[in-house]
Length: 544
Image 1 (cartoon, rainbow, N blue to C red):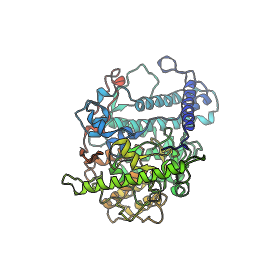
Image 2: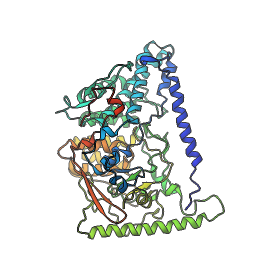
Image 3: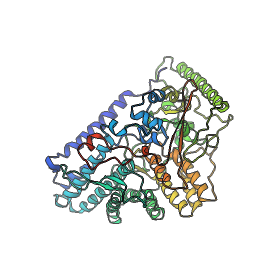
Image 4: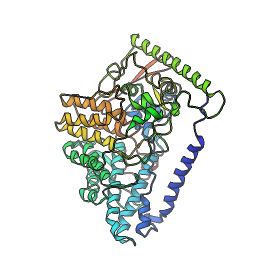
């Protein structure tokens, strides 16, 4: 089975370009001993913002923890048999595994602090730098807000969820604000970290940013307001977050329109998409992410990507550019895929009738029968070879019902911020402050660009709890391949009304079923500091 249209040369060029771009930028930051640098002009310092911010992909660890993902093409039954590995600990929700000693390094952690060092260089050296004085205030402000955002990402991954009752004693992370790289940076409490984050994304700094910016790697006021909104919402200060989320959307309320997927047969999302406030992505994503059966069950019928995007954008009859037997191969593939679908449905039916069966339950407490049950009468337009492929999900993960994404024209903003997701931030803040109708209307605005009009129906609710259930289901799919689902689960788990035990159901190719659970207060929700850092900094004791 061949897919000649996959441009491996293009993939190689993308990777090479990204590497060269980052290397070129690093060469401009000629760091000398003790954190001092040779950069001395406004122009040189501004170039430190020209980063391809690389924090990796969330679906290899935090996406697994919240059960959005099963990883990146890993054979899950095999990983579950290897019980002294990080993959096993996350997939099996096994707290007994010593994750700290298995985490030798962590590129996300290291890269985040590298970018923080760049921001500190700008903040410290810009006042005395030679060059355009009129640019200095905005550039210093941008560095402060970026420093806040990077620390906010780190504290939500490597520390406990912010809770006002315990934040003063909960261990946090090191909040780095200087260039003395030889000094041990002491771990602050979660409360201290958030105090510094809020100081770095203050109104003064936000208002000093340019009103708009054409480069998605650079910050403007929409981004600054979005950062503060997300910080305050993660602190569960919903009323305080609301005006910042609203201001961000007033400045940039672009919603990515996915209806073009119908004609293109592919989900095409560029890095420069107008809905990106700031882009923290990788080469291509969600390419090769395997989503769990529980996540598959959450898609709505008529979802443009799930039901209209084809494997590598290949509609039947459009896959080859030569005169050989590609068309025959495509139809062979279609027959194989349809047969696989029959096998999957048969095993699912067996599960339903089996005494050991346990319904798939998501983090909102709903079963798979209650989520996106499409019925036998609905056949998606791309059913023969969908981009979210259950065939390749099954083959590569060894899990029935999992789906793997196979197309390379979507560039999801993994660790950045988008206006699409800011609609959900504002929506939840409205719902939490008694404005359920207004909140769900914002969710519906996004859904109208996600769901075919033949299948779209507006969400409604009469109570906060009902509205939150609606928001949670839709937001989960909106935020695939990002940190959002993990961060949301941690926040909801700290609230009695919304805390949930998540159950992962794994059915292998022989129909054997295993279930695993993660409790709301499990220490797995906190990732370990890597050994190469803790060995040099004794204050960085693990936070779980």
